[in-house]
Image (cartoon, rainbow, N blue to C red; front, side, top):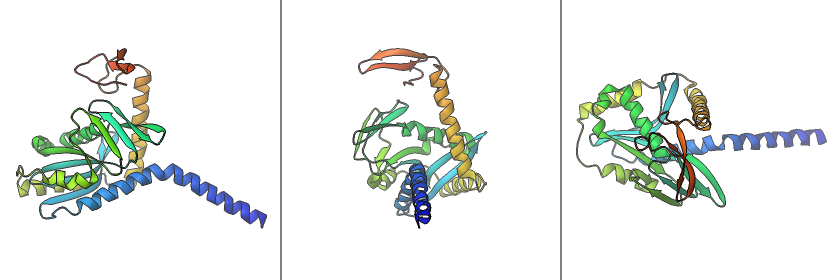
Length: 249
């Protein structure tokens, strides 16, 4: 009986450890599903919604949570499922996420989604020629407070997402152009059953490379030198190529 008890207890402990390890990924997926469900209420005749797109990007990969294509524009959406409070500014690479007494860092989702937009324009010259029609959106699901500075108008809460998209009322693309863009986005996805697992591996490699550059005094954004500077909130590292590069750490 004792032996069975220890085996059962061991299984429970391993399950808890595995769940805690996987929870950030599960939470992100739940957030994406929630946004996808919310987007499904858009008029299907006018707005084509594509979810969870993964593409090859050289020897790496890019994952885009959602793209909405309509005659009113192309909307590239990044989903963030965080509780607590979010503090950040337009140009800072990292924002602060507070939950109770705990403080965490998250990569600036505006920059993250701008990278997605640039990737789409590089990969699809047809989209690049229509870049004035692209709109970047960052949606937070559960944040209690969003305290942002600079031009952060593209950051919205889930309840305002569809309203923000439909606020663009002028047609800038034809139905034929929309159909061609949707077909390209669908057909060029990474056709690999293990694409998501490989993408997560690529993300970890990119984070390690970022941290390596910062630790060696190299700007991860433009390759310039990181110089110690003083601001009203204390000492920070800034790029030597300022103002062309506004990276700070």
